[in-house]
Image 1 (cartoon, rainbow, N blue to C red):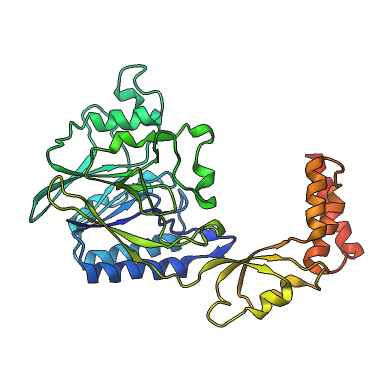
Image 2: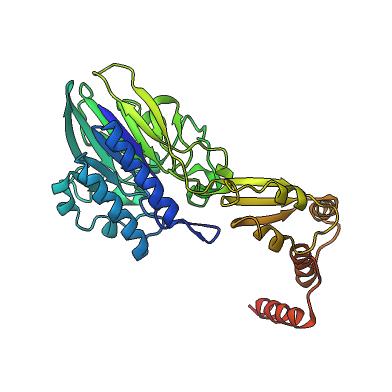
Length: 384
């Protein structure tokens, strides 16, 4: 059975205030095109469909277009809610969507009679059981067990799977959106998912909980990678959502299941973005000189190394680059200032710090009116 594994679409996300709608629409169309070409038996999407609990109308439109395109090629789609998703909003019209082979699970069982959504598909080898486990916190399921049984994320996931009484002689696939680790060893993470990872590892779930599945399709971590075993895998995001993902190779993960006990086959189908995300470092003249038609539309993070402050660097860069994410200065003076600050030898007044920042960005000092505006803002801030 050939499985297209996706996760963390984060539809509606912005990158440093830049709208990613067209980038997301383009990459979702690529996924549909690849599904038409490869004809997988099923497409699984493992959480964080949207970037916000209350998606915008545009985000809904992008997702609706994606689902309609998938429905037209008549391939079953299984998806679960992630921590960014609102269960009620994502689950809206789920019963109607099932008529088009789109199966959505947004909440874990709430009563002793309820169980995880289980979808059974068939291939030439027989049945494959797909268990849909949306994102959960211990408090979501604690009431289903005796007091003291659910103590953390790991015990919550373990117990909710154990109560399914899974037939391990059959082929079983899990969809899950949690933070899985290998005996405390964390998977590689990046800036775009850091805000949702709990400090101290409280949300860790050891990979031993899901080892017996023939394939564990995971979401939550934005870089594609396996966790301990090849059959336990994060697919990563279809787009780069932070500068720290500069070197990620975004792709569709294709997992092919053979007969029970056979080694799983993993393949990556590359996804090509409309705009790349990358870093540029050098003098202003060097970076401007690198601009080419095929790269000037990318999202770029710029670090200038000029020892002499260039005149209005951001304006000069914007003449040749469309989408500048951030502008940093790294030269002898800024390194000395950083070292001095780390040593605690002196501390800037907020006004002086802003004067320096303005001078670095604009290549000139603030005028009297601009200083007055900043002073008023700082005064209001100090009064809070």
